[in-house]
Image 1 (spheres, rainbow, N blue to C red):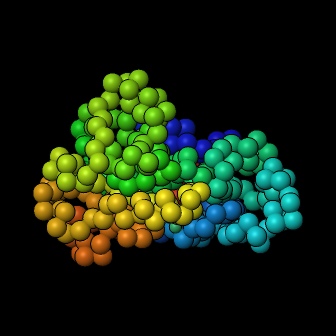
Image 2: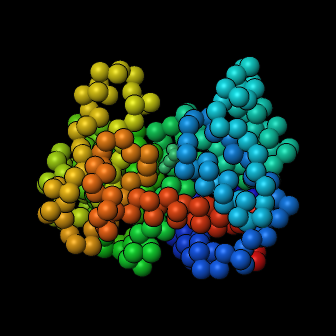
Length: 305
Ligand code: CP
């Protein structure tokens, strides 16, 4: 049985297979409409979500399967004091596969020991978000048909941003990739990931404090939200939340074929005036997320069509 805890649980070849399947699903949706008939997905979300939960549920329904679950811990027996292990072992008696989001880093690893069915990490605290990365990779792949040689700027909350942690781990495996980290001092990209994923392999990166310094060299600009829910102190959140706001004016020095990405939800960090720019692909990411999750569910359930 296979789980997905981190994006590096998948080899580059397995990721490529998932992207190929996702593209085939986009081209031939009818072929997959009964692929998971008789299978049940549980979505257990102990933290809020719009895209991840609904795209997992839409993915399973479009594969002909069924879904059950909860969207907040308060509506489960967690509110009565039940442990995560017991909740997961219970749901593993009902469902064939579980997608779970939890505010505690590492919670899906604990869950995977007791589930008895495949577990997908749908975001664990400020740690990882591997299925967002599959979404991001499909979006980049559809534009560029390669991951090699790209310069990727990551901007905003790089300390707690689980989407950027997973994306860097994934992209660091492709040759010629460079990273530019754009963050305030308090929200810098974690040292342990820089050491493990970049410095140990001699992968180039730079850290800058303004978008202007980075913009002309970027092939991809990945914006992130400063996450109120990860701060202990509201004053710090208020001070930092609007550090970076992408506007049409800031894009004047950008490449014509820049890819502008954001995992969403956004708050203020991308002006709505950017939405009509053809380089803005964040709503393409939303759509791609459902297709790549369809491919992932099929892989983990070992379903062939
Ligand atoms: N990108 C993402 O994880 O969005 P949600 O929090 O809405 O699931």
